[in-house]
Image (cartoon, rainbow, N blue to C red):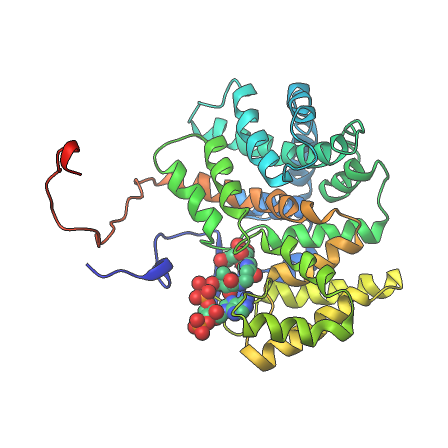
Length: 371
Ligand code: SDX
């Protein structure tokens, strides 16, 4: 048997959802640049789940379905009030909340196509409400009731701050959601597919995926990028911090990628968005530091930023708490996870690879008295 560490380069499935080829990322054949400019997050979700962009009527009906399903059982918020709010990480809360949501869905165990599609809608609609609700609860505030007249992106920011966002804020956030929606067989999507390939239910699949996304080598990196920028503090300390970290063989969060070697196309778009918002806000401190880090990382390690690098600055300027950056990633990626889960169910086979054993050779159990 041959082994490949971290399954690098291993093609584990076929999929018609998203593709990374020659550093170009497409969803269902459309480039993400095109989608970020010409579609909304709702259109992108529809595309990922149905294979085609919606017509105006289909979009209207889909948005109505999402809005209708946005509220969550109040019990979930009541549970959250009893969590150790000072210390618990919002990704741990989200992982638990999605699992709990399954308990309250009477159709959670139904496995026909229609029920699974309905579960995808419920999960997508409710995950934003759960993240925003927890953000309020930990501040001792009441969750804000979803506003059906707002877009998905605008409604999340509204539920987070109890204030309707400006058009620019909503648009920028909407684009960020489009850009994070799917990414081929990344670790969390693979996790979701492995889980549901046992014919487990969609709530289990998304819960497992959230667990995988949480780690700092994956989605958790966006929060760590922000922590690094805070620790550096000012542009004149960038060189010291980065050179010292590299000398000590530390990973610089938001850099490198298993698949992209010439740069992550999403990072380029997010960089432009972060610059625009920084200029508009009149405070470009984080953007300027980020730019300097990018130049230094290219020079010293030949590494380029990934999607988690400039999204940190963007979310900070949008006023999102730093430990909510990864839950925000999860909100967007739920669309991709659900698309992959539906695809997996459609042509399922158990995912069960082998391990090459490198432990002790066959031996006998020594009786207790002689050990
Ligand atoms: C996401 O897979 C996806 O598609 C994920 C994602 C998605 O949309 O789903 O794109 C989202 O998860 C982005 C990645 C977020 N993670 C980080 O930003 C954490 C920092 N980056 C790395 O730890 C790393 O680059 C990974 C985890 C992203 C990729 O890991 P690999 O492919 O296993 O690469 P590696 O760790 O084996 O690194 C190869 C070399 C090593 O040097 P050598 O030992 O060969 O000398 O590159 C170096 C590494 O030390 N390296 C870094 C580095 N990333 C790689 N050195 C310093 N800082 C880094 N960030």
